[in-house]
Image 1: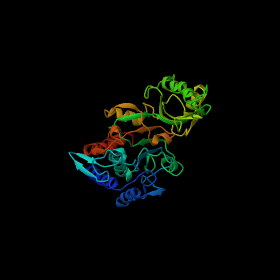
Image 2 (image 1 turned 90 degrees about the horizontal axis):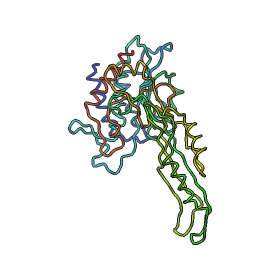
Image 3 (image 1 turned 30 degrees about the vertical axis):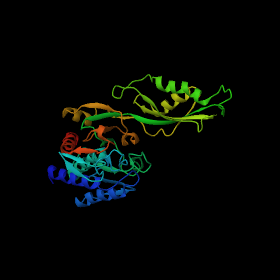
Image 4 (image 1 turned 60 degrees about the vertical axis):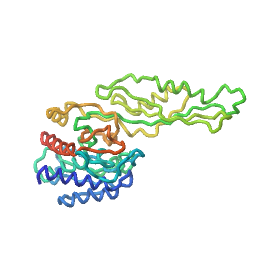
Length: 354
């Protein structure tokens, strides 16, 4: 099958995916669409929960293995949509619909790429394709659940919209619940231990603290206060103030180190990490996969957004058609030419290393 015909089949699949709701943990129907793709090309596949996966025909245990991964779940459409989020239609070269850009275009482009190489013998790498679930919710039944199911992975391409440039590093994420305590009481009486006032230096520390180590690719760690909650009535001093802090971690720190820093330095507050599993990720700039992309004229950069790379322990490259700034926006779209370029560049890239 030619690359052009594969690309047209991929665009048709993307339209069907858009028109099939697939919110995180409810991707069973889009998983069936991925199954139908493999059946149509006579490619054996397996399914684990709502994750659909396959290996190349001539898989060889003695060779290293390259993972091609993207997700088929979506967020829920926001209230700003002026178009039907489940109506896949093309206007002025743009394919509109929920999940078109994040990350449907990447998913179908990688699937077409995997299919292109599936029957080829004597590849330098094995190929494993995983269309994963629950990426948007960082759920327990997504790519993380597949790592004990699929063969051991040596390197990965994770499909997310990067305009087909090379995201060679990605920030990790820790969400902290921070609690500041005080003495509850009536607002009319003196109180030298007001939890709200106690929270002021805590918020100031969060605002001004600078993590020492900066990454060449990812810059500094970014810490942001995103939620605060306290009190229920005007005449009662609350017993505590609850806050949520979002920390985007560069590749100079482990998540455990960030937890230790907050718990040591945060003044008069209790900081509890919800999870430490979403780590920063990277791939060496001298890796053959990255060098092949650079030879093709692609740029390298560090990505501030989280993806399924966070659950991988092997070197991983984030790469895909589309633009990250369109993700989760109203009237989401991807250009048709971006999908066409995505398939072509993925294949060109892998030819250089396979």
